[in-house]
Image (tube, rainbow, N blue to C red; front, side, top):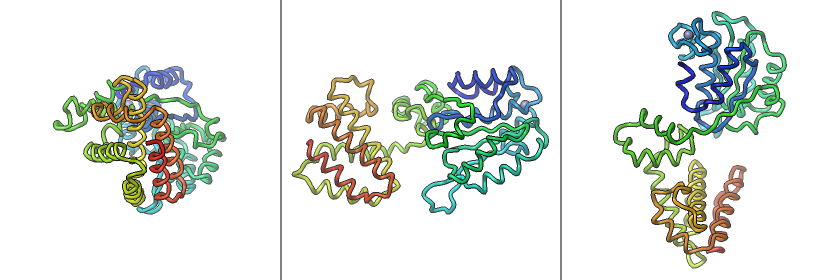
Length: 337
Ligand SMILES: [Zn+2]
């Protein structure tokens, strides 16, 4: 029953249920895969199943007090740790060593009312080095009756020594049918038109969070700006280069969205230019605008533009001079225009 509440993810669910039925649950797991596809839900179901008094075939009952307490994060033997921002204006949330030490103190005791203590560490790759090294000790000598579950969308950022001590389970992006099903159950009526749901589903790439949270008006405005830019940019219009670079440089919270949108548009245009069909395209709804635009340049030119955006995206993740990088990118666009 309970594991079935997670849509898709048949393989991870089967692995966990088999382990529960055979009493061969590992002492540490790493659930990895892109954001918002069911990893956290699976960790909670596993914690419930291990502590449930009336589980059936590895599935928790969802009714007993233990199941309900874990679901509500009020169970004394269930610990959920996630990255926190040190100040409200801090750029990135992290998991600090203090949080790991506190968890280690709690794990030192026997289960208080459950059978197994379960600690879930969400976004485990955001442990700083000190925290990660300290946590490694817990993985090397796990306390008795304890299950550790690490969750990560960027497992390559974890210490290899941490990964090697966990049983890894890969979660796949959700298929479009499942994304659409979740959207239908969640979104308001005015958003629930089939065309809107299709658009959200295509853009989500299998992530529920992306499908639910994208502001379609923002996206439409940004795309319009980008298409305009791609239609007009050339060495004759350096005014466009400088005005865009200057305005983007000021909106650091938008960089990722701006560059992602630009990259996806240029990708789609390159696909159209090479004769691909609409089914391969992310921005299908504006295909009639993108097709004539594609014809104006060679595939090679579009790919060089794609490369320029990609390089800029990588550079901006450091402390680069943003305006200069945006200008360089757009001048590269002019070169191939
Ligand atoms: Zn139960």
